[in-house]
Image 1 (tube, rainbow, N blue to C red):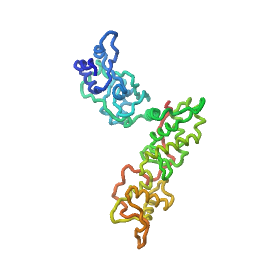
Image 2: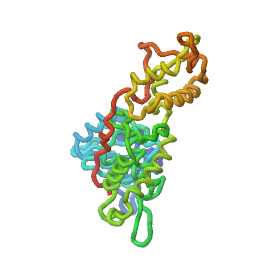
Image 3: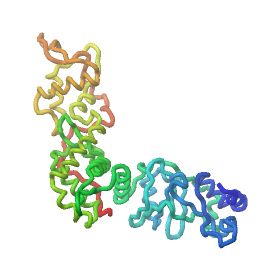
Length: 381
């Protein structure tokens, strides 16, 4: 912090409190530049403090709310920001936090605006901000993605991030023609909708609003939602040079790339057979389960469309999964009614009071496979 501010902090308690709230890694400027030949100290004292957001102030983000109602709703949805530094004016509110990861560019969504990092933002006016002397919070530091943003803003932020990592939404396809950047759209779809690919059942899973994974029956449904996303993100002018490249074959290439990305994100619990075994089976010394008993229990509880179509397919899967989860191999000598059966030793069914593993996919209810509601958005360009 420069020498001028150090002196001012001793003269003005309001300036001292604001400097304390923002911390030493903040780029402060006078609200108004000093007249030619006059010292910066005088400009600070007369006009107050402004901050420069962005990298210069250690990833400081400034958010302006154009109404008290918009601010109150945002704070209600984001309790982690209830203690961060806020400037209250008659017609607007200014909220500040430091991002530990993503730093957005300027964005405006009706009543919420994120400032350009180069903008000078007044945070202390000597004539009106004396209340900063007492009890003002400090600038909080948190991940940008833990904040709940309005849908349109959130979509723009994910687009901005995807462009930084994977390039622009469209790439050249020859003279006056463009085509989809498959890597950009595949990652954007996965990020927005929590898509995962189940290679066992050859199904795509889609994270619904209730945080449960719902099956996408066919690639056709996935292509339809990709097409809708493209139309929502790109401008009419961008769409006009894309029409010939938005046929099913081109869209399918992006869906295929999604499968390559999403399989890396998918825990084994999302496979319905794995979910059943994790939730219903436990290690139990001296007991045994036959493959037929496992299959009968599975049929009672699983209504997933992705479940195995035959007992034989189920047995093959359970042998692999139980080997991975419990290090127990299938035996051909589990005795039932005096006869040797296929099954597993040292495994048993969990008691009804046993609690299912938290976070596993709820595959034991029915799914409305066509009711997939993506984020609500309009054109974002």
